Image (cartoon, rainbow, N blue to C red; front, top):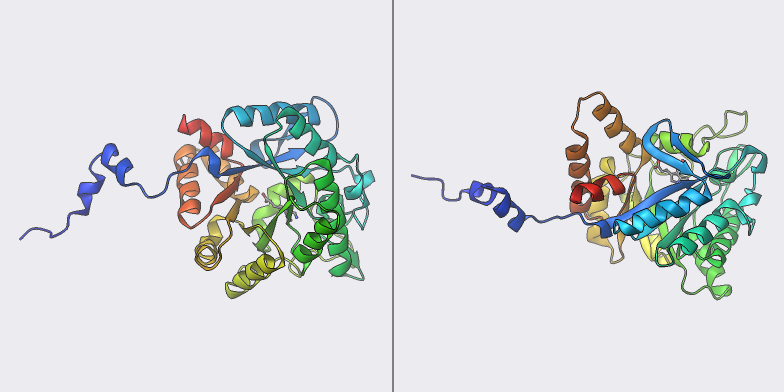
Length: 329
Ligand code: PBG
C-alpha cells in the first residue's frame, strides 16, 4: 500500500510551490501610514517604532516620491499636533492651513497620482486625547460626528481622495457622507474603520502622535465606550454592515493579526473592499523580537502579511510596506 494522495509533490521545490501558491503579496496591496510634524528638515525616529519616522512637510514630499518609485500607490496621513493647538473640540482640525491640510497638498504636489487618505478623528487634536468631545466624563457622539463631517470636508477641499474616520462614533459615516454630498464633494470616498477594537496594540502609535488619553479626573482613561470589545464577533459584522449602509466605500478591520477571524467573516459577508490595519504594536513586536535575535524579521514579516491577505484583506495598511516591497526586489 502507498499513500493515495501525496501532498508533498506540490511542495517539492520552489518552482512547484510558486506555481500552486494561492496568496501573493504585491506593492498594490499596501496603504502606507505616514506621520507628519511641523517644522523643516525633520525626520525623527519614533522610539517604540524602530525605523519609522515623523516627517516634516519637506521630507514628506521626499518620502512619497520614494514610495511612488517603489510601486506604492496609496498613503494614509496622520499628524502630530503641538499641545498649544489642542482643545476639547479639536478646533485645529478645521484649520484650512492646518498641518493635515498642508500635508495633503504637499503629497499631491510631489506626486499627483498618489492616492491620499486621511485619518479623521479628534484624538491628535484633542487636549484630552480622545476621538470625540469630552463632557462630564462622557464622549459626546452626535456633536463629535458633526465635527468629523466638517473635518472631512476640509480634507476633501485640500485634495484628499478618501477620508478615513477612525473614531467609532455611531452614525458618523452617514453624517460625513451627507456633508460631503451637500458640498458637492461627490468623488471623495470614505474608508470606514468599521470593526475597530479597543486594543492595547495602539500604544506605539499614541507615542508617535502624543495622543494617548490624558490622566485627569472626569476624562475616561481608555476608549472602551466607543472602540469595540475584543471579545465580540457578531458586533463586528453589525458595525460593518451599518457603515456600508451609511455610505462607506471601503471598510476596515483593526488591528490585524489577532482579528483575522473577523477579517475572514467580514470578507465572506460584504461586497465592498476590506482593508486591514496591521497596527503599531504589531510592528513593534516584530522589530523588538528581531532586534533581540529571537525571530527572523523578514520571514516573520512576510508570514504575517500573507496571513492578513489570505484571511481576506484587499488592502493592508502596514508600517512594513517599504520593507516588504524591498524584499520583493
Ligand atoms: C486614532 C487612531 C489610532 C490608530 C489609528 N487611528 C489610535 C487609537 O485609536 O487610539 C492606531 C494605529 C496604530 O496603532 O498603528 N483615531
